[in-house]
Amino acid sequence: MQRLALERLLRKAGLKPTEKRIAIAGLLFDGPTTKHVTADDVMETARRARVRVSQATVYNTLNQFCAAGLLKRIVIDNSSTFFDTNTDDHHHIYNEDDHHLVDLPMMAIDTDKLPPLGDGETIRSVDIVVRVGNK
Ligand SMILES: [Zn+2]
Image 1: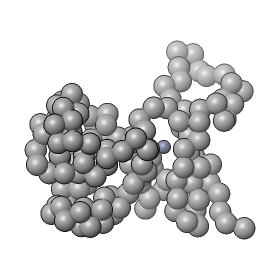
Image 2: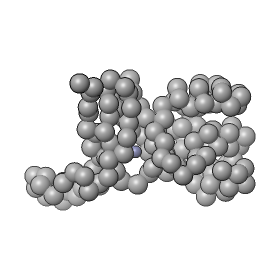
Image 3: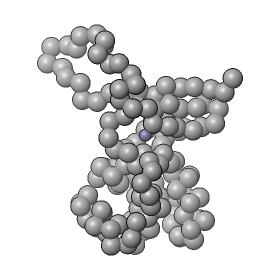
Image 4: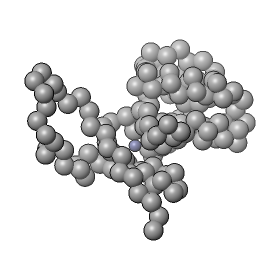
C-alpha cells in the first residue's frame, strides 16, 4: 500500500499518521491477503524491512490498531495472541504444533443450535477457535 493510502487508512480510523504507525501499517496492510501475525512476527518483519521500532512501540501500535478497528485480536491462550487483518466476523483453525492460524468462514460452524440465552441477553459475536495438531 502506498504511503498516502496508509495515511488515509490511519486518519479514517481516527489515528494520527505518525512515522511509526505508517511503517507498521505498511508491514501489515501491504496486500490483499489476510494476515494473522504475532507481535514477534511484526518485530521480525520490521527488522527485515530495516524499520527501526522498539518492542514497546510494536505492542502499543498493535493495541492502538485494535482499538481503532484496523485489527482484530485473537487470543489463543495466555502466551499466544494473534493480530488479524481480517476484522469481519469469522472463526479460526489453530494448529497447536505449528502455531499456525487460518480463517474458517462463519458458515462452516452452525451456531443455530446454541442453548437459549438468558432474558435480555443477545449474541454480540461468535468467534470459535478449532484447535488441531499434527498426527
Ligand atoms: Zn482470521
